[in-house]
Image (cartoon, rainbow over all chains, first blue to last red; front, top):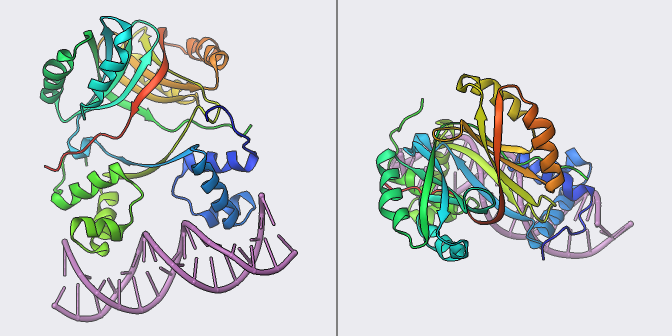
Length: 156
Length: 156
DNA sequence: ATTGAAAGAGTCTCAGT
DNA sequence: ACTGAGACTCTTTCAAT
């Protein structure tokens, strides 16, 4: 299921190109890679079937939509065995957009997007802190996002 | 430039729907929202011109592509005035996919994607640690990603 | 501003190689 | 497997409202 499948150079070139520009047409991408648009189509279909290409996601200007606050949460659990249960509770909070189980200081790491500081305070104090199993959290508010990009996949 | 523009309910409904499913056709989205496909098209063009909709991004299964390690870095700077210069150096590292200037313990927060632990060690020790202005870093390796989604934009 | 239809461009399928 | 062409679908434009 997971692990590396047998992807050839063309597969990797397609992924590489589409991670830089997801909107390129099959015909144009084919020209760039010296194959037909039909071949690009077949390969992408295969990559989707394998679950390697999961889909596309709309990227928006959150600030312009009134979402002014991005924050990161370092979460301490009472017992790390509570991860699954806490994760399930955190997933129910729509403002939480990312959640990772991590090594190091914190048991888990979350990212949260809010309209303003008041909403952040509400979510942290009245929702997150009431979840059973969370001991305490540390909040890092983003003052500026300088980078947010796809990883550059190598061709080998 | 930034700040809220005059977006009406339809604009927000379009953004809301496309953040859940970026691949829906204008015709289908129009049916769902009781307007024509042409209207959807005009609105999306406007949202793109305003820079509210920035584009789409391909999402892939990084593990399947051999990128087994996601880590978060808390970065301490010697002086926080060095942010811009350090940010510029970090941007040159292709494995760094995200960078935020933050309040709290760390001066900045980065996300890094690597093929394996060896590559992570190389990037941290031989590249990141050699950047002028970085005092030290703390590394949080993700053992599991339980959530990675778009924020759910509200319709008001 | 929105519509509906026509033109243009892209995706998808398939027979041939 | 890849190609090229045809069928199909989607995007884009535009005259009318």
